Amino acid sequence: MSFEYSERIKSLPPYLFAQIDKKKKEKIAQGVDVIDLGVGDPDMPTPEPIVKAMQRAVEKPEHHRYPSYEGMLSFREAVAEFYRRRFGVFLDPEKEVITLIGSKEGIAHFPLAFINPDDVVLCPDPAYPVYKIGTLFAGGVPYIMPLKEENNFLPDFKSIPKDVLKRAKIIWVNYPNNPTSAVADESFYRELIDWARENNIIVASDLAYSEIYFGNQKPMSILQIDGAKEVAIEFHSLSKTYNMTGWRIGMAVGNEKLISGLGKVKTNVDSGQFQAIQEAGITALKMPESELQKIREVYRQRREAMVKALQDAGLEVYSSTATFYLWVKVPKGYTSAQFVSLLLDECGIVCTPGNGFGEHGEGYFRISLTLPTERLLEAAERIRKLKI
Image (cartoon, rainbow, N blue to C red; front, side, top):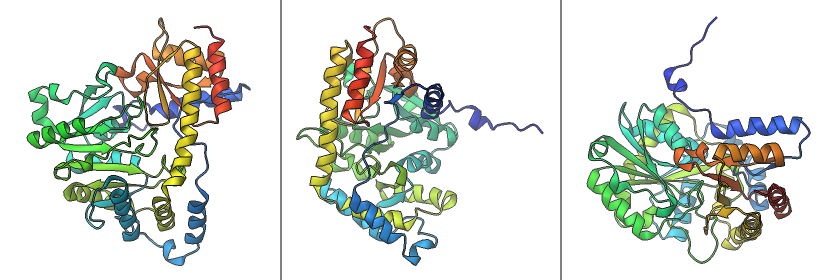
């Protein structure tokens, strides 16, 4: 029999990290000592109190049945309390918070609630691929907003042509940013909210890296801006903050109608997150700030050591105060793909090419700091020996 993929699937690019994983496995099979700096998957274990909470919760018979579609109220209340404590933002846990099976799931599903065929979604580039992929699944048209270093990797949304604006329904923003590690300030968000209200455009903010920062300037939630709740939904995750990537637990918060629309999609495509995981998530959200500071301190030390080592190797690293990524310029004479291939073939190092995040990532590559410092420095030493 002959089976044909749908046009929807044919239109999708190969998923970046799946490709990288395949190449890594090939090298390992060849006996190469591979240092994987590709995917942003924390190497530190989930904090013990969260694991203990999960162990207790999984034994409760009430958690063995179908969960609620929108998530346990107790988990949503914990999310609201986290937002109040961390950002000074007040949320109605019943109407302005929804539980997600990881923020990726919510990001991918959100356009289905508000995008009709040929509607435009304003997508940053370089960026997390799911903003564009979710748009394509919904039949929408991605409009690319370049993120350039000379503009601190912020989108110039005011330069979007009027004919595009008329068709635009959603704009995606992500700060602290993956892959560039850039941050956004209050003035950017204020301009964005005013512009979105004026043009009747939904602002979808991805805040997954808000708790991975260094120094005294804490990253903001867009919901801290007056008027944001009129136009904005924010996606957050426990994955990076609490080393819980494999647990698949996140949340969306913000405008009641936007949350309700996402909920209508979810009731038809999934049956909610396992309640034992939500119960463990409550423990995570209530953890003292001192525990999060310990995780941040590990990343700060890794960042400082790796930036110096890469600079000593002749590479130029974008200066940043957030995320566990380094955004590094490729040496002259190489494309992003060529240099990343060189690192894998000659050094046994897996990195992510900048153009894998979109055409405007060309000229850069991304390093993830999710390995112990000694392993990171070993990678930097291998690069130094290339004498680029």
